[in-house]
Every structure is written in structure tokens, then in C-alpha cells.
Image 1 (cartoon, rainbow, N blue to C red):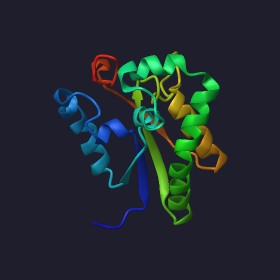
Image 2 (image 1 turned 180 degrees about the horizontal axis):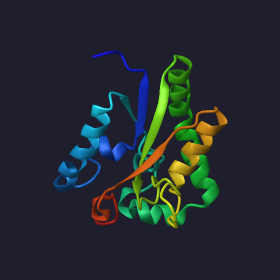
Image 3 (image 1 turned 120 degrees about the horizontal axis):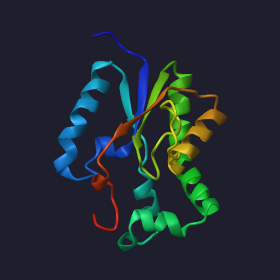
Image 4 (image 1 turned 90 degrees about the vertical axis):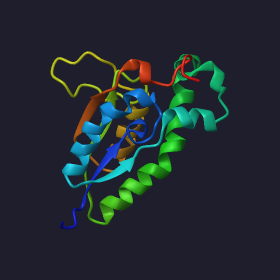
Length: 160
């Protein structure tokens, strides 16, 4: 197999059991597709864990925390957390790697990628919005796609 200089950025939950194990097999098809294209896979940091590392209470649930934080606080929290990740991606680019895609999660309040489907009305995930902005600041543009994960898989008040 030849050395491939392509990289795909993938949401954290696709590579980590961040959602119910019963749905883990549903993601195999997506992961096999990524592996078959021959690109390297880089895991995007998890916005849920970022909030927990920042001292937010787990018992409140991710969706509740999202509603309680101001947009400015959320932007600041995510921007700080993504800074080193974006530097890493930028270094891959400097080393000749092509960042050929970002995989988001459809209907995720944090990780949905806006407007990739025609006539799309769904909202951009806050975390992905900031990631896209930070990559654009570094002149890194790429393709983007959403994967549909059943909503009961998300970490929420009921999945502690």
C-alpha cells in the first residue's frame, strides 16, 4: 500500500464509545469507508469532555449546559480547547498532508455541520462552527459531511 498524505478529521464520538454501545455497530460502515479511502484519521476533541474538564457539572447534562452558557462563554471555552488541535492540523498541512474532509454528526447541538445538504435548514453545531472558523483563519479549507447517529446516543441528562 502506498503512503497516502490525506487526512480526515472525525468527530470524537465516532471513534470512542461516547454513545450507547448498542449503536456502535452502526458506525462500522462509516469507519470502514474512511479506512477504505486510505486517508489517515484524526479525532477531533470532544465538546462534552471539554465542558467537563472546565469544571462544568456532569449531572446537569450536556444539552442543559449548552442552554445555560452564554454564546460568548461557549465560544471562549471551545476556542481555547481547539487552539492546540488547530495547530496540529496546521502542522500536518505544512508537512504536505491534504486535509480532505471533516465528518460531523447530524442533529448534534455541538458537532453538526451546517448547510452541506441542498435545502438544508438545520443549525450549525456550535463546536463545528468554531472549528471551521479557526481552520479558515489558518487558510485550511476542506470538504465536510454529516453522519446520522440516532439521537438517543448523545450524552444527555439521561445518559450519565
